[in-house]
Image (cartoon, rainbow, N blue to C red; front, top):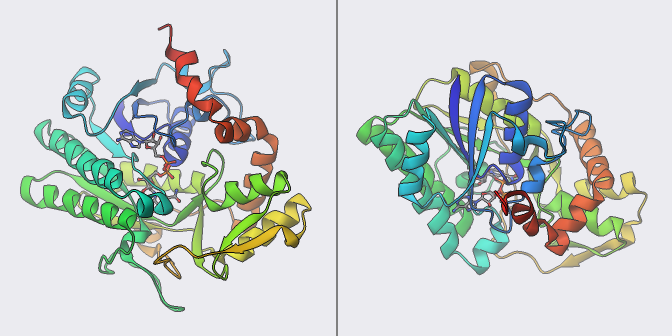
Length: 352
Ligand SMILES: NC(=O)c1ccc[n+]([C@@H]2O[C@H](COP(=O)([O-])OP(=O)(O)OC[C@H]3O[C@@H](n4cnc5c(N)ncnc54)[C@H](O)[C@@H]3O)[C@@H](O)[C@H]2O)c1
């Protein structure tokens, strides 16, 4: 049985990963360590993994009460806690999803990005090194490569050239991971994925934000000319890629993960409006983000040929499923927007 420490498993991608693992790989035990910042939401672990699959358990608590899952509220910067968890639960692998992840927030408040994304990763690495863990998997981002012009794609050999405090902190973490491999022989992999979309994404990011606003007939704020290009990856496909890395990747390898779905922000927004039957007049162009990267695109051929991974859904299918999920889960959306979700931890754990 694999014994995983998943950090940030109450966030968007981490919770989708925990759901997939508990649903499809019952031979794994997961300790899920999350600080429950504004982006961490235990309600993400209460419902079904994908809209078409059933609840994780029958008592309504979803995946939180699964015997193969232990949730712990805590900070990845707390070395003593990490060490205790690794010893107590005989952890063999750390998968580090925990991060401050929103570029706009990194522009207004960069310091917390250095604390969590850099110091937190360093803290986890020190434990991985001292406890001689089998593997350390760092979930990184294509944003570490900087921006592209109209042509070309990022490969794993593209030099790191981050442009925002967020991507600079993620690049620093990637370099630390590689340095721990080089200096102390820590067995690691780094995955760098493109923009994820799917259920349970905090509605500050493009797709849930625009969907939520459109549902409420509110303006859709679009940065600049709306022609920024991102490569979109359905979150479940990102999770299956990480599973392939966990099972098959040789140590020290870095993998780009992308969906081969380049779209401008406006193209994505038009699709949302069409699906919801809302008018384009809701779009409002607003002042651009400073230093906004124009285009990202991923060359994922290494993971496709090396680990036999493929995305399972097309963008057209994935975006429809995603919009429909937010329409069907408006209570989840309303709880996040109102801040109500932050009470969920107390209701689940207050009396335990
Ligand atoms: N969302 C994307 O499109 C995307 C794309 C590329 C890479 N990534 C990377 O994937 C990872 C997950 O992204 P996400 O979108 O799920 O982020 P998210 O913001 O939704 O979730 C982050 C989670 O980490 C937790 N966390 C934050 N600081 C912590 C700390 N100090 N200790 C413990 N937990 C802490 C939060 O509570 C939250 O649950 C991040 O490392 C991010 O850089 C995300």
